[in-house]
Each structure stands twice: as structure tokens, then as C-alpha cells.
Image 1 (tube, rainbow, N blue to C red):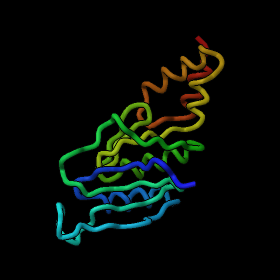
Image 2 (cartoon, helix red, strand yellow; image 1 turned 60 degrees about the vertical axis):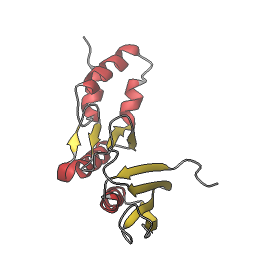
Image 3 (tube, helix red, strand yellow; image 1 turned 180 degrees about the vertical axis):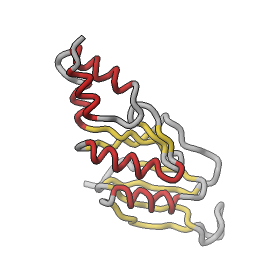
Image 4 (cartoon, rainbow, N blue to C red; image 1 turned 180 degrees about the horizontal axis):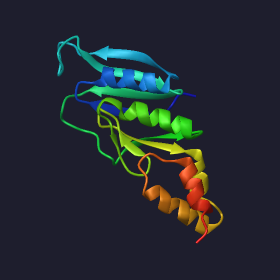
Length: 160
């Protein structure tokens, strides 16, 4: 079955560079099509209008649409990570060259797109059946930028 909903990302003029970054970071991806502006515009004829690509089998479209719209934190892409090493790898690559760390595992890449880099263990701790363990893990998470699995576990296990 084909994907019914596709994430569409509006860039000023950096769609190709953004897609190149995402393909280098996540590795399991590919460009599936590139469409160019025609003489009808609104972009310069022959320049890249749209890059269609996949990451882990999910389709995305990146548009060079000009400076009309910019990203904000109201929309983000969440990356589920198996362990701390995966969290660290994605964090470093996505904040490199002008990206910015945010709170609670959120960051912005150098193009302004928001990402959540989330270890699966954190979700387990936040949903712990013991409400006090979940509360302690949540409190620790709220003080973090990059999420630290060992620190979250230590906080959950800490006794008053």
C-alpha cells in the first residue's frame, strides 16, 4: 500500500542541501525524484523546485519555495532511538554547522527544522506504572537538552 500522507517541507532555497543532510544522517534513505521550475516560474527556470525523498521507507517532499514561510516548533520530526549512542549520533549530526539544541530532546537543524531525538527508554520511564518513578524521570527530562538515558534512569530510581 502506498503512503497516503506525505510530509511536505518548505525551504527558502536549500531543499537540496537539507535532503543531502538528512540522507547522510539517517543513511536509510534515497532521493526518488527531482522536479525543476519551468519557464512559468515562480522560481528560476531549470532550478530545483521539489526534491522527493524517502527516509526509512517514509516519503517526504522538500520544496524550494522562497522566504515566504519558515519552520517553527509547532511541527517537529521525532526520531525514536534504540540507545544513548544513537541519541548522541543524531544529536551531533543534526546540531552541527549551525543547528541549535533545545529543551527535552528537541533541537533545530541548520535549516530551522525541529527534531525530537528520543530514546525509547525515556518513553518507558515516563510511562512507568509507579507514578513516583515516572514523576522523577519527567522532572529530570525537563532539565535536559540532549536526553541522557543513564541520568533519566538514575533519577527514576532515586529515593527521597
